[in-house]
Image (cartoon, rainbow, N blue to C red; front, side, top):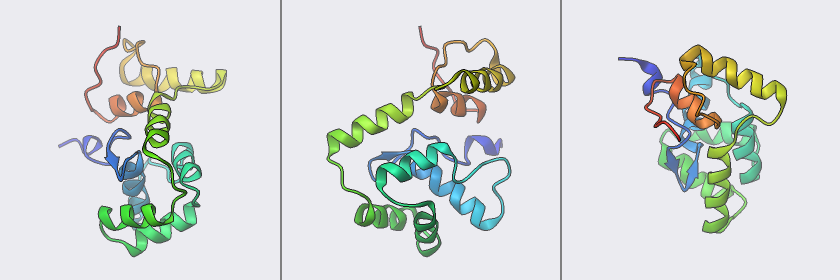
Length: 143
């Protein structure tokens, strides 16, 4: 079994209405256990979620330590995070999942990672799709 397909979960996995939350929990737990390997917590995508929720990485890490289940972390987040209505959360989720390189340096890094996995996937423009491809998940081709 290729562990990349099961750990960490895809950014696209929703928990408590947020994309990326389940992945961030996985990475945080791995850091706490010393098993993160090549994964980074907190990474720039984690920071985006933390900023949107109005919490710090330290607060989130403490919540993951205190809550052994995803449901416990999700409940903590819902009590603690800056409240957003459903429409605002959906818009934020969409933007995060569609986020692509934001600078020439970032674009070069994106192409390097993409080409190392599958150079034919020039249709990919979002980091979330590149992560899924790199971790062995199916990413449909775009026109």
